[in-house]
Image (tube, protein in one colour):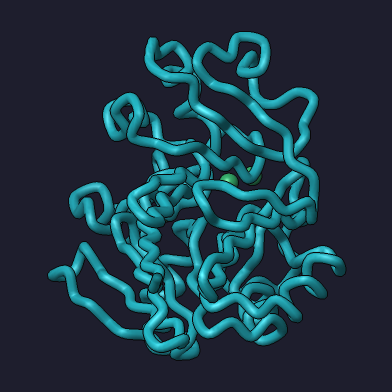
Length: 278
Ligand SMILES: [Zn+2]
Ligand SMILES: [Zn+2]
Ligand SMILES: [Zn+2]
């Protein structure tokens, strides 16, 4: 059976989001009036064979977006507020229990573990693969200020790596990805090119270095900060063709046709334009 996956970018911003409260830079000023330039907390929805898996839970309105029973499960990269804050109201739902997978983290965020409500938290270990909605998932460790896992999804020849938040990659993760060779790599890139070593998140130099090192068919940058948006606005054509920056509501479709993985991107903000990438 040919497989078709959809990855919807629900949010593509870093922790402050875009616009940044109080910031007068040109992007933040424009984003105040133009909702297409705004960036919500970084998260995505992976749909495979009608099953929906939410990647990170930082959007504040999860209970409105996802009625009872509409999500198969939630995968958390880590327990920073911009990746879990939507769970605080969601947990008090009265619907079905919802599995929430994430790294083993004793504290989690706030009192989420102590008062978990309908959320069923389950810990994952690096490189211990498991099956989720018929997809093979391998958690891979990332480099961040608290324990963080990226996720490598595979089914019917389609390979997708979702890697945020991170600054660089641990050696073991780099080696795994080099031999696994994702079709699509979604990667943290919060900052424009910096003169100093970035902390906790990739700048564009590091992100492009990881892209060249792993060699996926396509890399998509997310967890974007306003300074990177300003830089991109001034350097519009400076990214390689196989590297793209997403906006909120963009989606990527992956499907196998005659054994070849086809990747296409649908840009919601600009006339739902579809670009076949590979
Ligand atoms: Zn983050
Ligand atoms: Zn700004
Ligand atoms: Zn973080």
